[in-house]
Length: 89
Image 1 (cartoon, helix red, strand yellow):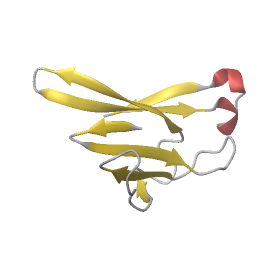
Image 2 (cartoon, helix red, strand yellow; image 1 turned 45 degrees about the horizontal axis):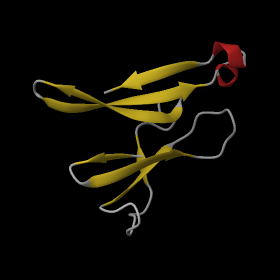
Image 3 (cartoon, one colour; image 1 turned 180 degrees about the horizontal axis):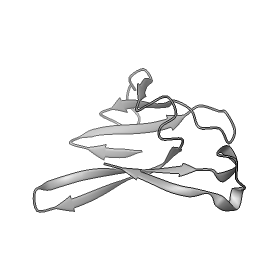
C-alpha cells in the first residue's frame, strides 16, 4: 500500500501460488474508509511478477513511483534460488 496526493493505493495479486497473474488495485481516501472495487492493472501477468512494493522516487521534477515485483524462479522454469525483482516506472 502507498499514498499519493491524499489517495491510498493497494496493489494485490491473485492466489495462484508461484505462477504470475493479473495484478489488481483498489483506492481510498482513508485507510479505514470505503475502498473502491478491485480493478486490473498492467498486463495479464504483470511482467511475470507479483507486487512486492511501490517505491516513491523523489526528484527535481517531482515524485515518481517505481513498481517492484517478485519474479519467482520456479514460475519461469528455474528454481526458487533463481528468483529476481523486476521494476517499472
